[in-house]
Figure (cartoon, rainbow, N blue to C red):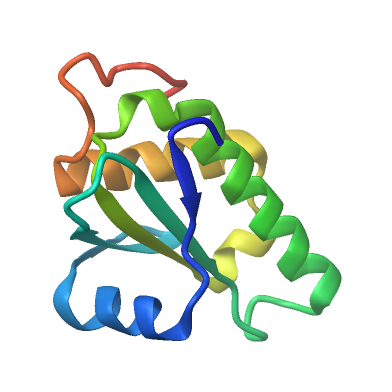
Length: 119
């Protein structure tokens, strides 16, 4: 990811959950908190409710790739945590990408020219 890095520490996840805003759709819940830096940090959480380890890793890779391809349309300086819901296990890549852009619009964290993607 060119403009982003991973959110790794449990403490960072908890801070975003506690202080950030959240919006949800059918596939994901997205928490967003400003981090006062020039880069985004993205964390992905997929619980055992979604499926076994193969399914969870597949969902994680779909989310990471969907965000990577669309990261130019997201504003900078944000901590973003994406929590997968059980419906994400059967979602296609296009549905995942569309859901991420939808949540970005709900949070108003897309740049003005953020109409990219396949919605």
